[in-house]
Amino acid sequence: MRLLVDVGNTALKVASEVNNNITIIEEGDINWSVVKEIAIAQVGPNKLLENVTTKAQQLSIPVRQAKVTCQLGAVKCAYPQFQNLGIDRWLGVVACHYLYPNKHCVVVDSGTASKVDVVTKAGEHLGGWILPGLDMMIESLVSNTQKVFSDSESLFLPELGRNTPNAVKNGALIATLGAVEAGIAQLNCDFEDIQVVFAGGYGELLQLHFEKPSVFIDDLVLKGLRNWCEFIHK
Ligand SMILES: Nc1ncnc2c1ncn2[C@@H]1O[C@H](COP(=O)(O)OP(=O)(O)O)[C@@H](O)[C@H]1O
Ligand SMILES: CC(C)(COP(=O)(O)O)[C@@H](O)C(=O)NCCC(=O)O
Ligand SMILES: [K+]
Image 1 (tube, helix red, strand yellow):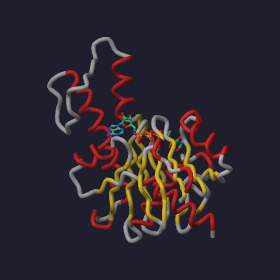
Image 2 (cartoon, protein in one colour):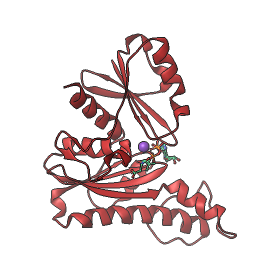
Image 3 (cartoon, helix red, strand yellow):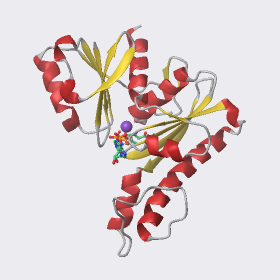
């Protein structure tokens, strides 16, 4: 079994890969006796990885850190300094290209930060945007103003807010959805040639409220990590 690990700035996501099938698991449920190798996509702190790396050392399991390259398979990175692109963004873009090879993709990974990336059906990564994640938007407003407050009960809805928590939370949602629409506009083509893919902790919520057809793929980065392993092992 190959262990796939996605280290974000808030959360660690772990999956087991057997015969090309990815199953998301809890870190505590890893069956270490069958782990043959570990592949890691890390943008977050080493602290989140401590248990995994300690166990890997104890059991002498090979560990591979995925790195961004100027090209991976058919996908070409938009960044001239490709090494500065977040590996999570890169793997999400690669995963989408291979999941939807005949579509231009708008890739939306919303977690600690929200990332919007655009990749053409030819595999050309056009680039993207980094926004504060929804929690970060709310927190920065509340902590930098006198009268703005939020709450845990109010929903995130794509409508005008009629009280302060609604105005704040709906604002965070609508700003993020607006960036997705802007990503689509960058492609300047019929929407039927585009696949919008959501991922990340807030991905499901965003996909639910996005008015155009789209999908939520919970393990998108982990799928990209699997693609990376296939290409690197060739
Ligand atoms: N159902 C959910 N599961 C996990 N995180 C969620 C969920 N709903 C919202 N979130 C938010 O998503 C963020 C974590 O998403 P994730 O993509 O795992 O983050 P990252 O990859 O940046 O570590 C946090 O801000 C968390 O509050
Ligand atoms: C923007 C990110 C911090 C998002 O990470 P996450 O929200 O998953 O914690 C990550 O993609 C990153 O570290 N990017 C490097 C800068 C760039 O992509 O240009
Ligand atoms: K992430």
